[in-house]
Each structure stands twice: as structure tokens, then as C-alpha cells.
Length: 440
Image 1 (cartoon, rainbow, N blue to C red):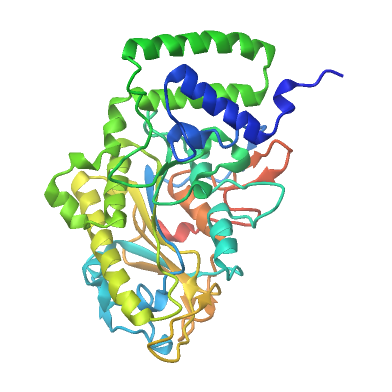
Image 2 (image 1 turned 30 degrees about the horizontal axis):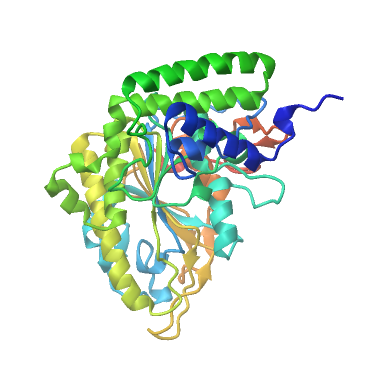
């Protein structure tokens, strides 16, 4: 029996071949953290899709800016202070009648009348690796498959607002958070390691002229056309799609959206000089340019010790950046069409013995916050007991949360996609239900 040469090598061998081909034929340096390199993580595609008859919501958002508080942000000391959990800082009223926040969120308190808060997030994953995998993917980790994160799902189901830019961009995260798994390389996120540098390695190799680049690209397409006829597998056509998408971005006038140096010094200063602040400025520019899903990571929320001083450093930065982002989106005229989400993999324990000891992990209950994108104004969903320890109303799982993000963009969260092995998957997992109540 003749062996298919495409299947006779490991995934790493195929990936190395494709990376070398890109450098040789296109004059493009690529790596796992670039648009093209990250898209070559895997080339398998789903077999087909099914959808239920669930109606999409009216007037959906166009984009999501997902602010990820990596490490487990304390809900007690930010957006859900309750006396029973003994917050380290006083609570203050906001412009929403029924919402109070930590006094460290003074600037954000002036925007809470625009927010919807889910106070009843819940999970059984109390460790960072399990939670960081499960939360964006709606499925627990398995040894035989990599599940797509919600950004990849939305990239596939919602598509691109701007055909020349990636639909999914991850800022300050990791390559693993971008990996589309079985969904395929076309839906892997573009990773931005430093917002000041923009999209790395997207320019032509400096020794290759525009004419030479066009000639090499034409030569590659001609060579590939014969190859595709001989090997009409899905993996091969996916490779062509990856090259096509990367080339469109390289040549697009909208690539300037990745350059935050285009902004005035006044705008940049409002966000602050931190990577998180500048990352959120980049996310605002990308939403305005048509990027569907931008994730910005903010690390350092795993506060087991010295939590009081850690909060005093961390929360004011979040306060400044989040407030600046909301005001900037309003200035650009896109807050109503952009869903801004503040989320964390779990919360923190309500108990602490003294100021030198922090709060432990708390997956049983915590809060996620939503602004813009058509959410209800000054609205809360779900409830907990006096200690913020147990949910008393409307628990919301990881799967429910991801289904809610999809629903917010007008995507049917009940859509079923099949992996190459024929297994059915949904953006919210097997049981995820969108929390439609948070939308107006």
C-alpha cells in the first residue's frame, strides 16, 4: 500500500517544513509568536457544522475586548465587596444605584452605570493550569486533543469585520492561549508580546523588494497549484489559506492599526505607561479597525501573601486603564458596538487571618464584569451569601460564560462543529447556556 507522504511525518516535521518554505519562498521570517507562524500550529479543519434554531440577539456587538486578570482577581477587593469577606479597603458607591466597588476603583466607579456584572461565576477547577485551560475552552484538558479557545471559536463563527486583519489577537498572553487546536491554523490567534512593537515579523525581509516579493509569491502559487492537484487533502488547502491570510495582512493599509505610536502622547498617557495600559490602547485601535476579538492579559493577581500592598499596586492600575479604555471607546464612537469584559479564571477566598496573609483560590464563586456592547445598564446577575462564598442565585459556568460572549456578538452558541475525528463540540461545551439576561 502506498503511503501518503503528508501523513508519514510528525506534526513538528510538517511545521518545520512549512516555516522553512515561508522563509525561502516569501522572504518572511516567522516564528510561533508571529501571525503566520502561529497560524501554522495545526492545519486540521472541522468536517462540517450544525446549528440549532436558536435566534441570535438583536443588534449584536461587532467586537470583544477581553481583559484577562491572570491569577485569580479578588472579587472581595474589587467589584464585589461584602462586609462578611472583610475587604482590605473601604467600599464606595457608584453611578449605579445598586452597585458598590472598592475605593481603589474610584475612576471606574464613575462608569459602573454602564456595566452588567455576573456575581455568580462558578467552577470546580481550583488550580491555575486546569482553570486557565478550561475557562477559555469550555472543556477540561485531555491528552488526545487540544480544544479551541473562545477567541478561535469566535474567529470561526463570527468571522472577520475587516478581511485584511486577523479576527483573533492575543496581547501579552502566551502562544498556548492562541492555539486553535483541532479547529485549525486559520483560527489561531495572532500573538502580540509587546504592544509597543505591534505585530512582530509581519514585514517583508528587508532584502526582498516589492517586485521580488510579488514574483516569488506568484511562483509559489504556481508551484502549489500542481501540488494541490496531486494532494487534495484538507491539510494542504489549509496551508494555502494560511499563506493567503498572512499576505493580505502584510499588504494591507490597515496594518497601521497595530502601531500605537500613531496615537497622541495625551491619549497614551491616559492609559499609563505599563504594558497592560498600552495593550488596552492597542486593543481599542484594533476594535476600531475591525478586529473581532482582542484579549489583553494582566498578570500578577495570585495574591497568597501580602495581599493588602499587592492590591494597592495592582487595582489602581486596573482602575486607570479600564476607565481610560471605556472613555476612549466612547470617544471613538464604538463603545456601544464593543463588548468589554473583565474576567479571571477564579476568585479568591473570603477568609484571611491578618494583613500578611493573602487570600486562597476560590473557584466556587466570583464575578465577571461587562461594559458596552449592548449590555444592560447598572445590572447585576446572580447572587452570593454574605461572605461571597456560596452562590445563592443563578450559577454561571465557564461554558455559560463563553456561550454568552458568542451570543453577545450575534453568534448562535448552540452551533455544533465536528473535529476531524467526528466528535461534536460547542463554544460553551456540552451544557453551556448564554446569559442573555445581561443584554438589553
